Structure formats: structure tokens, C-alpha cells
Image (cartoon, rainbow, N blue to C red; front, side):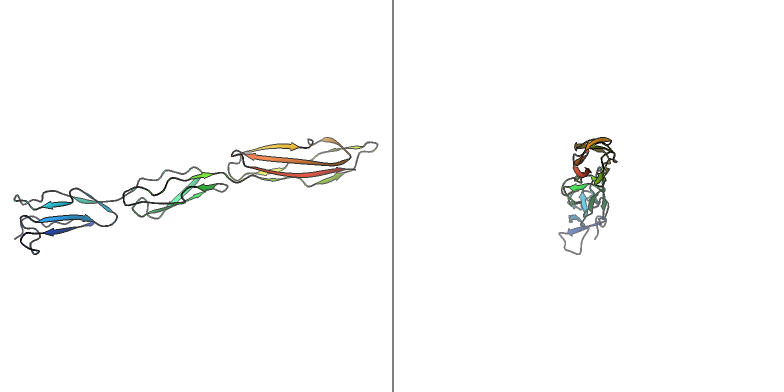
Length: 205
């Protein structure tokens, strides 16, 4: 006869063994071993007994395994296949101009922790710089020089947008240049010290 209430465990299984045989799952002295389905963790005793008081010796339930919410990634983002549930896979991407360093994907594991480590998005892309076209100028009448103006180079950085432009070699715009060929070179740095350079020439004759 049934002594304790029929034992069920949501999202899990109770494997019961009675001293009176397999037909008596809830008789006095029955021992039940409890386990949970994949993706769930047992909270409570892993085995219970049917007591003379007509109660089971303990209570247990299956709790869904969940990982903590992953922190936001500076200049990047991630998309997860199943939120913070077990086996959920989160794939990372970075904003344009940045590259991912570290694990591209992390998986919520059976112990409730994420695999791998948190990646970072780093600026590895140099700025884009374009110098004016090379040009020729004729010396002013009665002189061996020409006053030459030009626009500074166009610089663009897709990452942080902050540019430090430095002229490394050559005269300033509006300079009076003697006859001959003059090379003007510009170098641009972004905040991550990635650099790009360009040059153009001015020929005075």
C-alpha cells in the first residue's frame, strides 16, 4: 500500500527502490534518488526516504542553470542564442574601426559560469589620410620664387574620430618656395597612436 505521497520532481526524475519490490514506489522505507534534466541543478538532498510519519525525509527541486548577465563591452556588443541559460552561446562584435582581442564566443556552462574570458575591442586601424595632388608653380616675374598655398590633407578615423595631424617635413602652406622640387609630408595619429602618412610634391620653375 502507498504510505507516502507519490514523489514527483518537475524537470527531473525520482528513481525509487522499495524493500517490498518495484511495485511499491511509495511504501514505508522506500528510498528515492533524485536527479534533474540537463540544464537544471538539484537543490536539496539527492536521496529521500519514506518515513513512518508518512512524509518524505526531505524536499528537493530542480532549478534552471543560469549564468550571470555578461557585462557590456566598450565599443562592442554581443548577441546570445538563449539569454543566460545553459548552452547559450554569446558572439561578440566590435564597432567599425575596432578589432576584437580575446574570445569571440562564450558559452554558459553546466556549472553556471561562462567559458573563456571577456574580450575587448581595441583600435588597431590607422586613420585614413589623403594629401593634395602634386602641383607645379611658375616663379613670379623677376623672382626665383613662388608663393604656394594648399589645403591641409583630409583625415578621417573610423574609430575614435580624434586626430592629431603633424607635418613632419616641408614648408607651411603660403610659403615662398624657391625653384626646384619640394616634398611635403603629413602624418596623422589617432588616440591609439595608430598612424598614417601621405606626401605630395610642389615643383617651382
